[in-house]
Image 1 (spheres, one colour):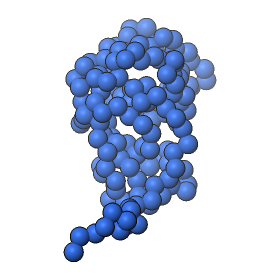
Image 2 (tube, one colour):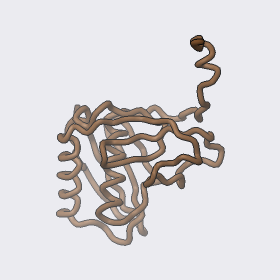
Image 3 (cartoon, one colour):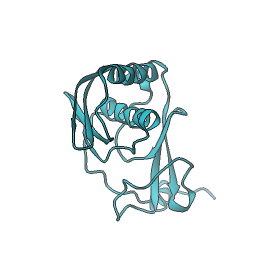
Length: 162
């Protein structure tokens, strides 16, 4: 016997409500930037970001400011990932079935038992409720407009142009 549409809705997992309205290209670029910074400099994913259409800011806890050459290398790497046209996919998992490489450190204490996992190709994976593009090419061009360093926090300000 087939389930009716209402039965499917009743059995759907409950996810936390998302409290932000991000600009999908900039938010997806944030995922790429988080993963790139972690791979290059061993820092955790940022817990402090502000993602908007005009400009986005993200802070990383590292012990030194990055050089202009290092910043240019990050920008180049992100644009290469964008041009690779990596797919952005989602899956729902329970807390006892978290894929390898996913940390739950950024989740609020009241996070639901079912989580949405976002994958960007084989490059990035994390729990996230935000809005994203369908593939990295939709991000457009990624440009770091400024950086600053203050007491162990390195800030990157960036823009994306569709």
